Length: 119
Image (tube, rainbow, N blue to C red; front, side, top):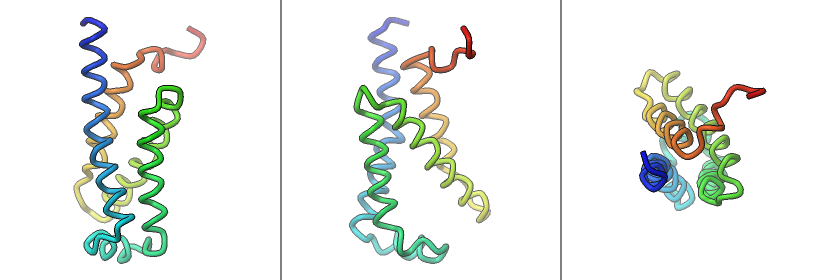
């Protein structure tokens, strides 16, 4: 695979979860009724705007070249928590798909992240 093809593939793999997280963050910040109702039922009511801001910051970090690794780790952690909540409620977890896409995108972008320590 050429470098250009790898670059395009990594952008696509990272963009899909990024768009969904940005959309979720905007809905939280704007106070979308369905979002507020759902998150308030599980006790996150007072934190909804903060969660929305965090989502937008994490995605921004992912797309800034010097901070993409930190953004990647923050998004993985955030989506891992979301997946745990969804699975704990007996729902199917779309967050797991986004986690897989992030991992695949990061692998295509920089395989050295996955090299064993000491190599």
